[in-house]
Length: 280
Ligand code: FAD
Image (cartoon, rainbow, N blue to C red; front, side):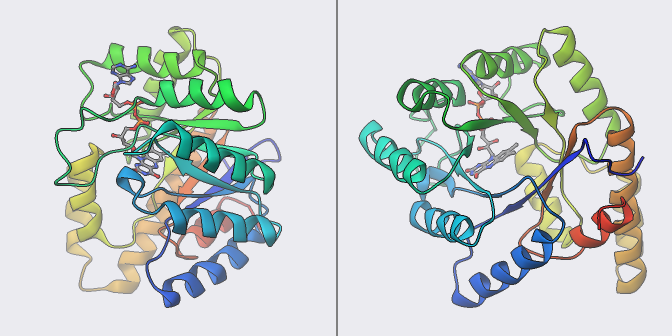
């Protein structure tokens, strides 16, 4: 199923560390901006480590006329600094936030200081009312620390009860994981939109490492197929682009309200996948 007018598309960036990285992001934003996304989002380094870079990219995006949403977590911050950041976002035209618990950078202890996302959502609602559309994270293959499938869905429900507006999922490569998850969420009484987060396959070695940490399963057949195409970059790109296009079609035809792309700050292959889905 291709995109229709009812579907929402959004693109995620991470804050680059170099001037060249920022130039590339600006170019990517310009290209993907032509696809008329609902918003761009900019991630927040573990523990708040990219606070200033995230803010700079978000505010620049807004200044250039792109609806841009910061990701935010308490990290190691006090309530006062989160409050002043929220105020700054509000006065500069930010109207959407991706609210997370986040993770602590490695070497920063056992994570016992982390503030769960439902508490951040309550905090933002308490201090800024309905100003922000609040996105939260959801995990079709279940968060790696979750006690069970059921408790993870209950905690997602708590995030909505605290005032979240919609959710974006962790990436996945099994469409069934998303479909089953949405079905279970609906049966648990969640009726807000759950947008599938889709990760185009760019650097497979990095993806394998990252997937182990975040609990996203790479199907065995997919892994074998990609490994076998490694020596033919053209075929590999074509295969991965087709695979992700089909994954998008599958979730859209199951009723997904749109797609959030983890772009890795690259125009391709996200742009081609969107074109394949009829978004021009
Ligand atoms: P929570 O919703 O707090 O859940 C974390 C764990 O605790 C889960 O196992 C859950 O079952 C459990 N839990 C939830 N609520 C409670 C509660 N009240 N009491 C007890 N247990 C609870 N990370 C970054 O560092 N920066 C980013 O910008 C970033 N962006 C992301 C965007 C998306 C769309 C997604 C899906 C993930 C993103 N992440 C990001 C990763 C995310 O920070 C990690 O997955 C983190 O470990 C959990 O964050 P959360 O908001 O889902 O946490």
